[in-house]
Length: 113
Image (tube, rainbow, N blue to C red):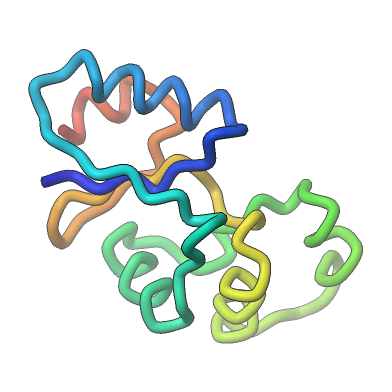
C-alpha cells in the first residue's frame, strides 16, 4: 500500500490526493505535521527518495530563512532541522515500499505509481 506524507493546507498535496483517489491504488494518508518523522525515519525517507537532505527542505519557509539560511549545514544538521520543524519538508511525498517521490507534479506521479 502506498503512503502519502500529506499537508492538508498545501494545494500540491491536495492535488496529489485527488490524483491518487482517481487511481486504483490503495494508500494511507500520513499528516506529517501532526505526526512528525523522527531523525531515523527521515534518514530512511531520504534514502528512499535518493536525494541529499537539503533537497527535501522548503528553503523559502520562514523557519528556514530565520534559522538556517546562509549557514553551512551538514546532512545530519539538515535532517535534525527537518525533524524539529516538519513544516520545512517538501510535500507531498508518496512512498511505495523501498522507493519514494516528491509528488508535486502529477506527470511524475503517473510514472511512479
